[in-house]
Image (cartoon, rainbow, N blue to C red; front, side, top):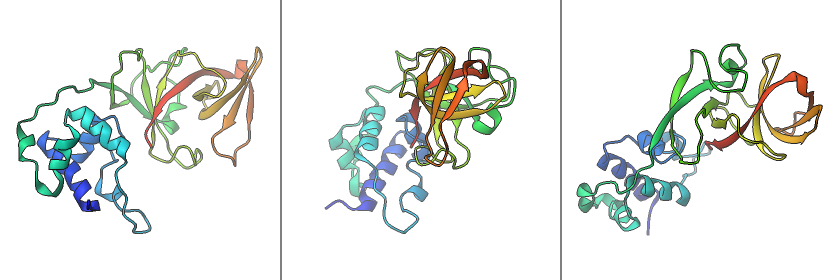
Length: 221
């Protein structure tokens, strides 16, 4: 029977085989860099946390390892995997990263909502053939976006993409407020922004008040 330590140990050994830290392995797989941290392996209540099958599948795809090879790593086995080379790795793109608190300040975006100016950090994100240039990342700060987004989550935003009712979006007002919402009605004069947090009311803004709206295409969870 597989144990909690067996599965996490196999992930650690897979990272070592590719000369990566657990965080580096998570980034290569397109996951939150903290997904495999030791602090994430036990919950606040002391209960054991297991890696999801989805995260394991993404790790195998990113490293080119098969499920059989991953199973060989359980319990310290897996000598055969030393010679395995990645078959297909997603290309990683470095995109700008900034926190929500800083995003409201002037100079970080152009008129179309694309990243501009100085002061951006960087984060790796798997490149997609369908992804257009101009992607950037926003780091959630605080708890106002719970339960959907938590403090420290990373949102990948695609400015210039067409947005539709029901999309998760980031909006910036001309007063410098930056918020993550769900797009409601988008009329000729007003736009509705539905709060992710049920404790926050619906926002209805005049279009003249909105500088730009960009679609969220990915979020670390």
